[in-house]
Image (cartoon, rainbow, N blue to C red; front, top):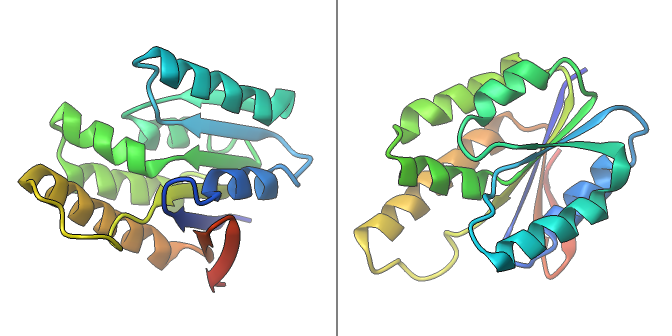
Length: 171
């Protein structure tokens, strides 16, 4: 039976650690969908560290853009799928010049219709700070806010991470 869990928080709030810990409680087949790209040495070190933290229980898929198609392809193969994170994914979508609304609809459709798995979705909450100075940053903040709302609306559970402490918002 499908269940969607959204884990939101600021930078270094503990959202990825919490989602991984909760998802790892399952003894079933687990997939990790990584949306970040290895663009420099610092990111390479972060990615390697995260792979070691997951261990051998997880199959990792690195997909910066087409996670909707990936979920459709692997959704019935795994019992648990952790997507980390849609914040980076949205940035990748915008940077690639893809239509944010279309990609958001594809993503929502994929997570609601393509996978019977337990889905953990990690995202940043970027709307709590000051209004960004540039039009691109404001568009990003607004798009991520709408994406988070869409996912939270269909999620069975929503957690907001604050200083490493999960606050259950829904479910």
